[in-house]
Length: 210
Image (cartoon, rainbow, N blue to C red):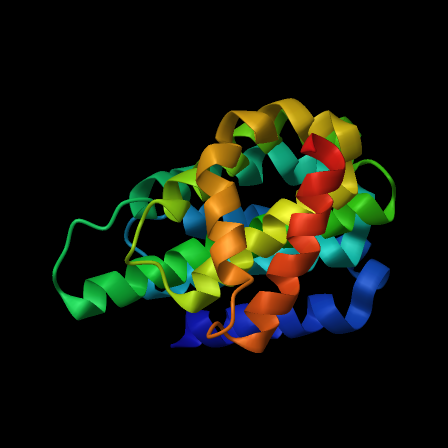
């Protein structure tokens, strides 16, 4: 409980301090990465820790690039664990969907943070293909929640907005999986925020891949 509370405080600080967090970011990221790699720490805290990486990135912008590779290794490790849910236990399914959301939120925050200093194409391009492959894998899973669907679609749009034509080739490789998910999310019956994000992403995709 103490760890969960501390994670919440760090998230609040990142959102409220913005770039004033920069002098403390390295120490924070060392602690966050150590906690994410600690197998004795309760798994319930891991999704929040991943999400915090996105909050820190949005606070310190391009300065997050110095932690990027270390963080993405942990993000992709979590992504591999939750891409397929081989459990019938509702609690397990709920947890792994929380982990999926956290992976997507971390990537979204990092992309936005780097984009603020116009360095996303310089630093994130190496991670773009595996992120899109993760989203494509989730697109084929019927056990994903509406929140996971919306976050997947939003991240695709964010990647296109941040990377422009650089994202075309890795996106073309997986658009056969991603495009139907985006198109389905545009239809009536979905949550309004999901429809809005899906329509925006569809425009982004059309502009870059035709």
